[in-house]
Amino acid sequence: MISKKMQAMLSKGSAIRAMFEEGKRLSALYGAENVYDFSLGNPNTPTPEKVKEAIIEVLEGDSVSIHGYMLNAGYPEVRQAVAENINKRYGANLSYENVVMTVGAAGGLNVTLKVLLDEGDEVIIIAPYFGEYLRYIDNFGGKAVIVPPNPPTFLPNITAFENAITSRTKAVIINTPNNPTGVVYDDETLKAMAEVLERKEKEYGNAIYLISDEPYREIIFEDAVHCYIPHYYKNTIVGYSYSKSLSLPGERIGYLIIPSCLDSFADFIKASGDATRTLGFVNAPSLMQKVVALCLDEKTNVDFYAKNRHDIYTALTKMGYQCTKPQGAFYIWCKALEDDDKAFCERAKQFNILVVPGTSFGCKGWFRLAYCVSNQTIQNSLPAFQKLIDSYKN
Ligand code: PLP
Image (tube, rainbow, N blue to C red; front, top):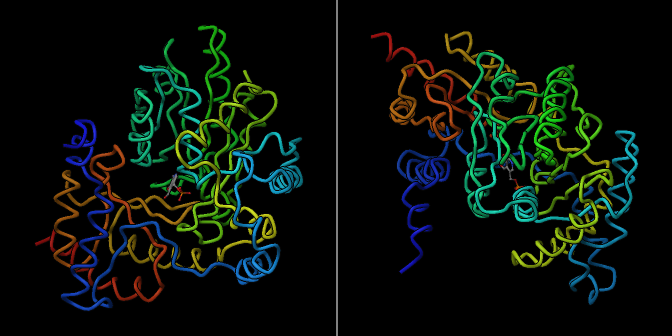
């Protein structure tokens, strides 16, 4: 018998994964070109050529050490290269000691929460949120406290954010550019959040850690700017990933930035190496650490996402869908055509459109569309979106 906790988790399932499975089933029935699967954030643009070259270059080196264990936090020279790149881009002052290589953003978040949480500690998340946060927090006995959604901007409402903080608040997770809304947190929002956090730290006499989950940092459009969050608030930990920025989701590589000014910095650093090991990751994949160190200035094809974003946003809004114009990431967040977003997504399936209900992100009445698909899929899907909206008019 599996554990009661896992039984409960399985019974809830993952709506996104379920949609993905459904996409495979419908493709077998109707042909892949007639199924418009916008369910999963799996990049559809190839990894840059330089990544392939770097893999070959690394593999042509010492074939014994490249596959070996190293320090749990990762190769010092890789961490130093990452630190210098962040210093160059954001005017930070990091060294290898501030960087822990991780098994993607998911690995980094789990390491961070393991380091921070005691049973019953509260972690604030802002709806709509990446649904996996609930599971990650639960992994370590934490309690998720949800700040309600704030349409139409979907930036956090600062009063609601402040009201969510209690003496048990250990951490806050933010995600910019955001999955599922595509919203990028601006300077004003970040200053306001930092001011609240500093005040609450003083009031309760505890550190409140801000965990900035940034797998979409490089996918940003027009005049939107990604702000370096540790410049705003000293107790910030940044989680990064190459899953989206280099189209490497299956390779499981990312890092944490842990600035030296963080409260309990020395313990945090020791504990994060320990957590990486005891969670069973042991270390981030060796080959990929070496590869990303050679590709720090490489970028995914942002133009590919920008074109998809333009085409889908323009077409859907013209048809009458109410959508948030994404500033980053590769999701578009739209209002469902009925209050029950799950029923709406079921109806969309009748037109071979797969999208994810807002309820999966803690926000009823909306849906998420992942436009990291081929542009052809977007073009093919438009008549189906038209039929879907028409079906609500009849
Ligand atoms: N955080 C957010 C907001 C995500 O959207 C994802 C993946 O989709 C992750 C974390 C996990 O990313 P990774 O593949 O780097 O573990």
